[in-house]
Every structure is written in C-alpha cells, then in structure tokens.
Amino acid sequence: MRAARFIEAGRGAEIVDVPTPSPRAGEVLIRVAGAGACHSDLHVLDHGLGIPGPFTLGHENTGWIAALGEGVTGWQEGDAVAVYGPWGCGSCRTCQTSAENYCERHASIPTYGGGLGSDGGMAEYMIVPSPRLLVPLGGLDPIKAAPLSDAALTPYHAIKAALPLLSPDATVLVVGVGGLGHMAVQILRALTPTRLIAADIDDTKLAHARQLGANVTINTRDGRAAEEIRDLVGQRGITVALDFVGAQSTIDLAAQVVGRNSHISIVGLGGGTLHYAANNPPYGTQVTIPYWGSRTELMEVIALAQAGHIAAAVQTFPLEEVNEVYQRLREGRIQGRAVVMP
Image (cartoon, rainbow, N blue to C red):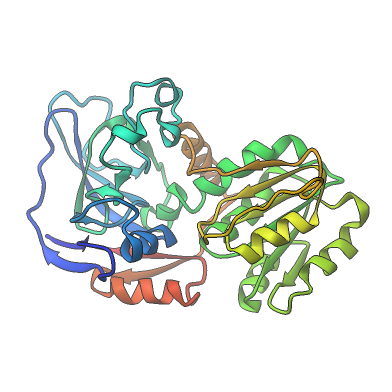
C-alpha cells in the first residue's frame, strides 16, 4: 500500500510502498477514509519534536473497520469510526478516566499516537492498538468527519474548561480562524450565548468566521487589534481568550485584552511566551495550555456533529499531493481543514 512517511526532520513527507499490516491480538485494522493535515505535522516534519522516524503521518483519522484482531469484541467489519489520536498507556488514572491526552506515563511511551510516532492514517490502512481508541461515527460521512478527532476535539476541550465563565454578558475572543479556530467558532455558538469576537490576519477567514456565527471580526495585521477590542468590551475586558496561533503577537494580544477573573487558553504552537508582571495579565486570570481532549469529549464532539451543530469545512486531496498540502498549510492557503484521502 502507499503511505506518506516521516523519515527525519527537515525532509518532506516521503510517499513509498509499505506492506499492508495485519492486526495482532487486541488490535483493529482500519481502512482509512481521510486523514487531516495539521500544523502539528509541520512541527514534526520541520523539527522532529524528538519523535524518531520513520513512521506514517496522519494523526486525525477516520475510516472503516477492515479486520479485527483476536479477542476484539463489540465491533464489526465495516463499522465507520473515528480514531482517538493521543494514545496513552491505557491503565494510569488519567487514562482510566478517558483523558489519555494527559497520560501520566507519557514520558516512558515511545509514541504520542498514530501519526506521531506510530504509523498513522496517511496510508490505505492503519493499525489501531486497542478498540478503546475507536468512536463510532454513525451516519456521518467519514471523510468530512476526519477533522473532528483533532481540529474539533482540541478546541472543544479548551472551551469546555472555560464554560463556567462564558455567560450571556461575557465576551470570548478566538484568535486564528484556521483548522481549529473555525471549529471553535461553531462549538462556541452551539454551547454558549456569549458574544464572540474572531481575530485573524486573513480577511477571507474572517468572512468565514462571520458566516459561522462570529458577532464581530477584527483583522490583526495593522497592529490596532488590542485597541479595537478594548473599545468594544470596555473595562470588563475579554472574559475568555482562545489563542489558536500561539505566536508572540497573539499571546501578547490575549494578555492585553482580557479583564480580571478571566481565562487565557494558549492552544497554538507558534512559539510565543506569556510574560507575567504584577496585574499583567490581570489578577484572577487563569492560564491553560490544553492538549487535545479526552475520549469521552471526542464522543461529545461527534454527537454535536451528528446533531448538525458543527461541521468541518473540508478541502480534499489525494495522497500523492501531501507535500503540496503541507506547503499550502505553511502559507495559510487552506480554508478550514485539508483532508488527505489515501
């Protein structure tokens, strides 16, 4: 079968022929429908992140069960499933509560999951090491549903942590309306009555945010975004700031516009640093650095999609164009989420 592989940092994905895997006892073989292309893939390709290659890329995966390993019950061949991405030990306290994204033994596990150390979904088939990592899709289109396992799950996890602050008289700021940000706008609209400001440097993405329900959009390119936001929210400030970029400029913006007793969630991996001084960010501000989400939360995300409350904007590409997809992602030329179809 054909697969897009990470070999080493500084090299593009290599498309090669590899043997089609067979599931061992306890494993499940998935025929891949789609694999989302994520900025995290760029960090792996460009910098390695300490994950040794080679392995097949693609950590945002959906498909159909092709074969069940010995001892696997409760599933049938042909079932449409999403693959939960962060693979923990499965037995520590956090894994037992379905939060494998915060596995206590992560430092001793040689892989973060399929596409992040283990073979992922940018191939015709992938092995999932345990059926606990599968969530049924029901009637959802597996190709369109591929981004739910990360591009929707990650912002859902971040938003859920801040829900107590998202009252009708509060204002939430979404910075970056790309793959994760455009899902965050929809999730916020589905779960909260809060006023929503979306910020980005791309007017096309801001127009998309308005279509998805943002009340106000602000282009941050001219450097006046903090002033514009403060004029809108007054002394109370932004109650929840969700930064899906994580660059120095976006982190600084979030710190400048939140009020007291607020919440900053830094989701993006843009390399910025949150600097603290007395009352800056303001007193009472909670700062979180969320990573992905739990298996239970993925079930909730899929339920939102099944009810029609959220849907990823998907651009599809064949496997052979994966390096072009990553280059377009680097240049900000992907609307919504790119899904590679093996």
